[in-house]
Amino acid sequence: MKVLVCVSSKTGNTLKVASAIQEALPDAELYKVENAPPSASYDLIFMGFWVDKGTADEKAQEYMATIGSKKVALFATLGAYPDSAHADDSLKNAAALLPDCEIEGRYICQGAIDPKLIAWMEKLPSEHPHSPDEARRKRWADAASHPDAQDCQRAADWAVELYQRIASFQGGVAVSG
Image 1 (cartoon, rainbow, N blue to C red):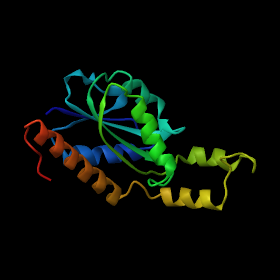
Image 2: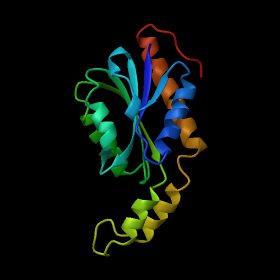
Image 3: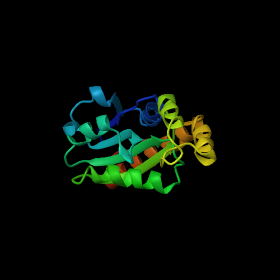
Image 4: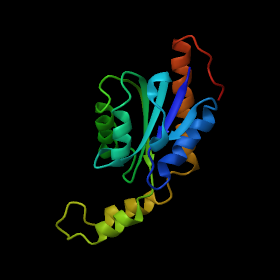
């Protein structure tokens, strides 16, 4: 089974996760979205992005629009907590961008927020929905140390399990863990 790990990463967070997935699936090819080859020759695509406005970032969306009908596993990073409704909605919104694809799995973890974005939010008036408050500043601080080694290991384990499930279903060779 030919596997592509395609990633859009602004600050390097999502690239860390993509690298962990590629290391766990050594025959997988890893490309940044800007240099990714056409998806036609791949059997499975791990599509990675950073969450922007509740969905995949613009560069990821551009590549996703070219995928066509494929098996896709989505992975992402975001500043919010990965068990939040925002995280779940972001993955659902990204999946909706791939209506002809079989979404085989989803993984999301926290990622450090771009300092420029935090600086912008710090200047927002208190009545703005994204203005800083105690809870938001705590989430920013929590996000600053992610993705960490545990997040990357979870992503690698998720990718291997997903790959093995698909390969065994297709009668292919499974990757050892």
